[in-house]
Image 1 (cartoon, rainbow over the protein chains, first blue to last red):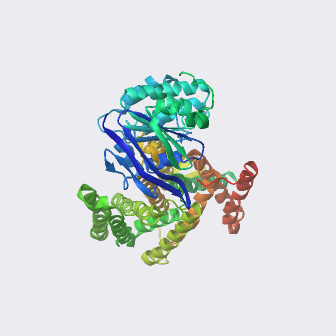
Image 2 (image 1 turned 60 degrees about the vertical axis):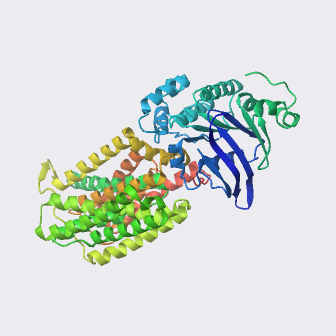
Length: 244
Length: 345
């Protein structure tokens, strides 16, 4: 077992009186892919936003390298190695692709050149290089997801959090994105993947958690979860799992 | 109206338009980065003009003490709210910027004002006094309201405006002031006489706009400010600190306001409350440009200047009415074009 990178300890998050996440715990060892699957509205995105510091948890804490993050701002979490690719991408729509990427390097660690990072991102996503002078708002859905991921990678994250990367994308593009997620793990980045598309997510992940109405109800190695009858019935349907 | 008068009015309109353009640019900058409709922008202009005039008379302007007082408040506030600012280099930086800088500037003003140094020294001192007011006001008033609605921010902004106008009366009295022109030269082009000051205004405005264009188009900091304006959440997620973007925008607005004041001080008599009407005209230009487009603001501001100067010839008592009425067709057209109220954020 590799070193523990990030932990979620008994976290609850509320919007006013509504508890969106209730007492969720989860460990992410370095260099692994952990996925949180569940239906729309189960609290998955809320959990990611709280981990990034965009929302404050009502209870519980997040730990990076064993240190609690309670008083750490979003900016400082970026500098510490957390990156979130939000569900709505949140790109700088009127600015060119390359400026979006360069801004992703705003809190890049000292001594890691942004130009080199740009080359690495272009190597991962050749499409972005073709479109580097185009405004981000003119990209297709798949390209936007690539740009959002590329921008997050420019910060040299140690934990990349992806919120519904397959949302609204064609199946072929989803396959590309999943292949990339697997490639990223090989470079040592840990990934926390939140997905409604449980079948796809459990194929690439090492560990899986199922969330239902705010609580984590099932957890286990991704391959086991994919074979669990309760998961198959609720989230995978009866179709055979297609290979990626 | 003959050609000479028309040319004279056009010149006047373009010159005033240039000043409104600077104001409009600051308003757009502050609004897009922080969502604050910055009503007191005009006060920076009046403060700039009156501070320069006070220095010219050999007095220490009250604004120097205001900067020191606001610096002290901002410093205490940061010490109380941000534990990380209480130790090490962060503390040194905080004390140097919030107390050291305004204290040094105020001391310099106190010492050099009676000496009647040259115009360049006075202009530099005026900028050094007014520019920090922007970041201080942002940190004291608007930073704690960062999550508030646009309406709450607007109310706070009106409050700051009223406060600054009142202080302006205390510092400078009810008398208007003019300062000596930056250049006494006159240029005759056929029927048109162009004053040296007009050329200064156009030149400096053009230069500032060019510099802003380079800053926003070429530098990472400028792009980070634009990014904050385009997508606030996206900017936070790449680690651009909203607070830094905010005080930078306010600092630039205060600086641009002080520059406008210095430029217009020799042309128009400035009173403690002149800033509001001047600022409103910049606001009209900013609204015409939809509060987003910088080149749009510049063009709209020149148009506002021209409307004002020709209106003052044909119907001088309705001059302001005519200028402010131009906003109505723009708003009507905009509401027809987009029938839905825009979401906040």
